[in-house]
Amino acid sequence: MRIATFNLENLFTRPNAMSNSAGAVGQQALDDHAELNAIVARSVYSDSDKARLLELDQRYRFSAPIAPDGALIVLQKIRGQLYTREGGALRISAEGRGVWTGWFELTRMDVGWNATANTGRVVHETNADILICVEVENRPTLERFNEQVLGAQFGRPFEHVMVIDGNDRRGIDVGVMSRYPIVGVRSHVDDRSDDGARIFSRDCPEYGIRLPNGELLIVIPNHFKSKRGGNDEKAQALRLAQARRAIEIGTAATAVTRHVIIGGDLNDTPDSDALAPLWANGFTDVQDHRDYPTDRPGTFDTGTAANKIDYLIMSPALRGTLQTTGIERRGSFHPRTWEPFDTVKSKADEASDHHLVWADFRI
Image (cartoon, rainbow, N blue to C red; front, top):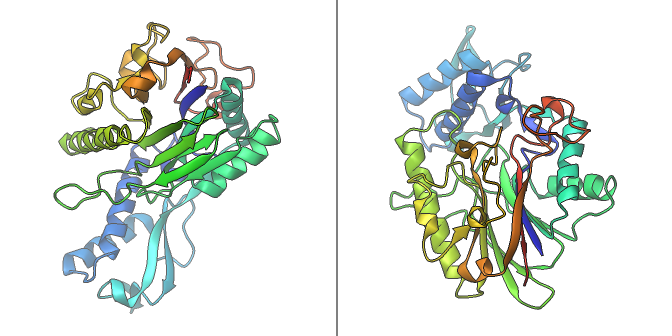
């Protein structure tokens, strides 16, 4: 049985602010998008809230009747008014969340077909039985990819596909595709820290998968807080909290079955303080296996050790069944470092700037 994890970097659409060309402006838009939605969710808008909304309107012009060319953030209004114009001057007329319905969205771009097809090629060439999927828009999109790319283009779709929408408003979720039945689903989207904040940036779902021999495997996908836009103490503390909770969930799952795997893009290196809790209770990453590449252990960009951020972390009993492991990099365009697929001719064609990590088990 082969299990893999792959950051798909969205399949058909992606926020313009997250494009490679957006740079610091894109990161600013991601931060402002989060702030805007946090402000308008408040039951009462203070004077400072209103002033900030007007300030950000100067940057993004979301009050314009037609969104400006190249807009990164737009306002979706369903009922009531957030703002009005009086004598040509814009003012925030809503006093709080209860008097209008709407939200701010990131504008999106289509992912090129070559990149989507090469994502399918990476998945097809690896031929995993269970694939942990990171950065997928939603379940209908993953189903569309499964049917129209893996099925129609490569002739082997997965029988079972599941995604639970998580906490990320940008449409970045984690899910699973499996050749074996998914018999149980449990979300941790509302798990909170002591201060009441949600712990997981997306979710930390548990998927129970019934294996051909009748045993249960629990798969726990995750996508920890990114370093994009900075790696300050707050970001590190959030990844640490996520690691602590993920290992609690994984350890508790071993009371149900001995076969448990935590996988995904954890956005930090194995020696980081933030990920240290994950190496408790006998859980280990496939990097510990003798077959794991040592020259380039990383799973992102050029594969250096500093870019080891994608994981398959096994319970002790599952580790005992591990046969071999490896990394599929050919969907990523670095021709001076390794030979990519012949269909990956440029950065625009690459499946992802992450690499797929796979492991074979005898269960």
